[in-house]
Length: 454
Image 1: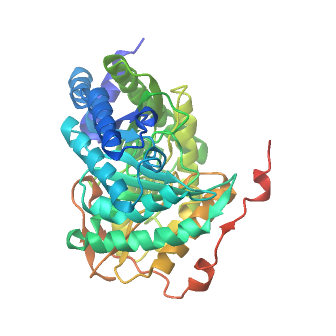
Image 2: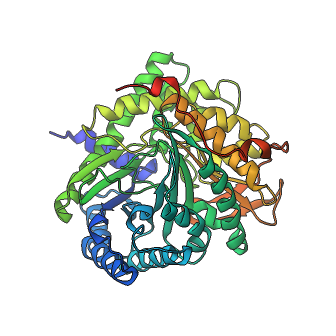
Image 3: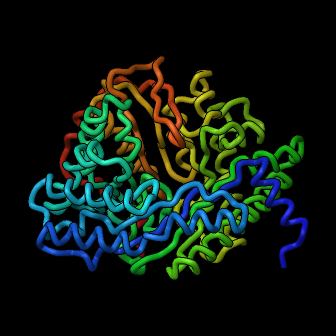
């Protein structure tokens, strides 16, 4: 039974602490759409998405009214298009046509984003997957709601450095093709190591090949709730601090579980996972950085930041797994720069650097996220940053990701404006020393010795 006190607590979290269900994401398998004829393939993709997702937005809105819980985004993820288009696509423009079909279908059903313009190339690339990677700049420039992700490494297979080198070039070209909008195309492009099959958050969501035909995954977010709860822990010891975070994460996850189950019933689609990531927004009070400050840091980036973030991430997971049997996705704390006002403030204060962010990614939920850098950053430097982050994920057996935005025409001291949930970001400096000779080696970095388990 849910007590009156629990109901009051939940209402307070929603009304005063920015608690919301960040996204209901409907994963859709497109494996049965595969066809050697490109026109038929596009027709099948459009038909299946619009048929299964036709009531997704209305369902999210109905749940929000029924429970009084804001459901901010309604999204779709699909099977990686690098697989789906392999038989039909003979050139880059063929893949772009699929991106436009995804965009058309997404707009038809009214969702915010559709993810899955993706390829899984952690050990090697097929010819069709390479074509998809090379098509990404044009695909993201000519669509509005399509998101792209590429998995270039894993603990089991190592890092595909040929793909890493190519993705540096792809990010630069995407930035150039969307230069008039502060290179916003790069905000819809993520490079992964150990990408999960059930991530509901964009831009990295795709529907894994081991998943059912359709599944509901929910991402719930509550950094404002955690921050408010920690105000009661000021001056207390670490045990009290940890218990407070765990209890709060439990309550947040229960909200997500409730919404996920209801959405599953209404759409007659199996429930997959609840992702309890603390995903910030530009709204005041909805910040992971402010949680770190409440723990005791003057700014994120100060000495002790990595330890505080490790504590936060671990306690969020411990609280969440007690609230739901199906916690998945990326569950933990996100540290995007542009989407978190506290992180932006730390950058402007000179406390938070790219190198410190990289150290923080060793213990956070994802990686280098929504970081705006000078527009003249070379493709080789972009690849070097990607390689560093992929190595952290590979060695530590965790998901890491890179979402870098080289903003064409802007440099350190300027700021990029993305709008909405993406917010704005100051342009951060990048190490100016070169790595081209390293990046231009061919092949892959082998998997670490601890991957040899069977």
